[in-house]
Amino acid sequence: MNEAATTAGHPARPTPLDDPFTAALDTRQARFAQRRGRITRFDPRVSVFYGHPLVMTDADWADTAALAGPGATVGLRDLHSPIPRGWDLVETFDLVQYSGAGVVGAPDPDAVLLGTDDVPEMAALVDLTRPGPFLPRTVELGDFLGHRDGGGRLVAMAGMRLRVPGWVEISGVCTHPDARGQGRARRLIAAVAYRIVAGGDTPFLHTTADNPATRLYESMGFVLRSEVPLQIVRVPKGDRPCSDSMA
Image (cartoon, rainbow, N blue to C red):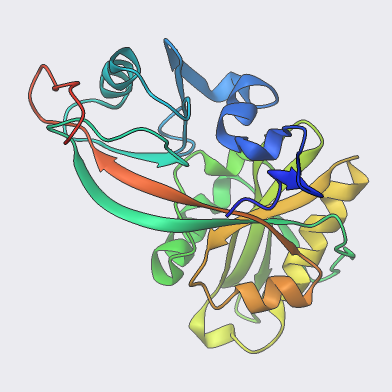
C-alpha cells in the first residue's frame, strides 16, 4: 500500500518521502554518502540504509555487492525487481511511514540533549529495547533527547535520523523497561517534533506494521502515509556474485 501514490484516483506528485533513503543521501545528508554507480549508502558507522532504484539492473546489484562487501546484509526498500541467484533473502518487514504534519510538538523541560559522550549509554539502551539500528555515529544525524532517572541513568530517548527536503524523521524512540508507563516516549517524541518544526521542517517516522507503538503514534496525530516491503538481503560470500535473477 502506498497512500501517497494516488490522489482522487490520479497519480500524486512524487515527494522526497517516496524514496527517503535516496533523497537524504542525495541532498541534506550527502556528507554521509558513499556511492557506486546508482547505489548509495550511509557511512556504515552512521546508518545501515541504502538508496537504490526501484528496479535494479545487473550493474546495480554488482555495485551494491561492492559497496557492502561479501556476506554483508543490505536493506532494500520497496524493491520492484527479483533478487539474483546467490543472494539470500534474510527477512522481510512491512515498513510503514507516518506523516507528522498534524502533530503538535511541545518542549520537555526534563529532556536533556544527548551527544557523543552519551553514545555508550544510548547504544546500551538500544540493545536492551531494540527500536532499530543505532551505530557509533548515528548521533551525528540530528538532535537526540533523553530522560535520566534520579540516579542519572539514561532511561528513555528519541531523536532525529533521515533529513530530506522539508522533512525530518523521528527515530530511536525507546524506553527502559523500568521506566515504561510514565509517558516518557510521548513527551520525547513531542519534544523532538517541536524542534523539527522550529527548524522549518515537518516530522515523519518509520516503524513496522506489527509494532504496538503505532497506537501511540496515531494517538499523537501521526497519519499513515505508506506501507512498503523492506527486504534484508545477504551479499554472496564469493568474489563474483551472480547477477542472474532468481527464477
